[in-house]
Image 1: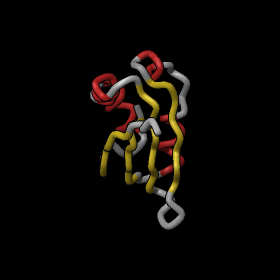
Image 2 (image 1 turned 45 degrees about the vertical axis):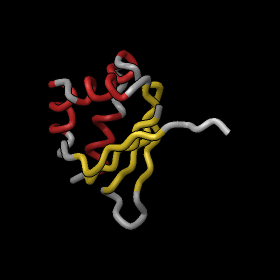
Image 3 (image 1 turned 120 degrees about the horizontal axis):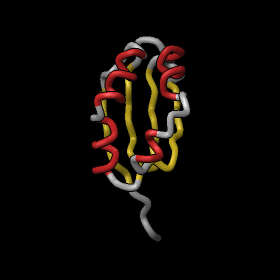
Length: 90
């Protein structure tokens, strides 16, 4: 399943340093990877498309204290929107 997250960042570069650190935590909690899309109109607005095993694993990961601390260090912990999407068989 895909989890789509829209975030407004205070500082894209600071956020990027934190979220690209290879700690392996996302993978251990069911993440299969992510793609980041950055708004052309506002470079501090990003859309993240995560491939995750399921929403429960994502929610458990994103609410872990160490994840929240890392996001706080990046200068942002605010989510604008989180939604789920699924591939539909044709």
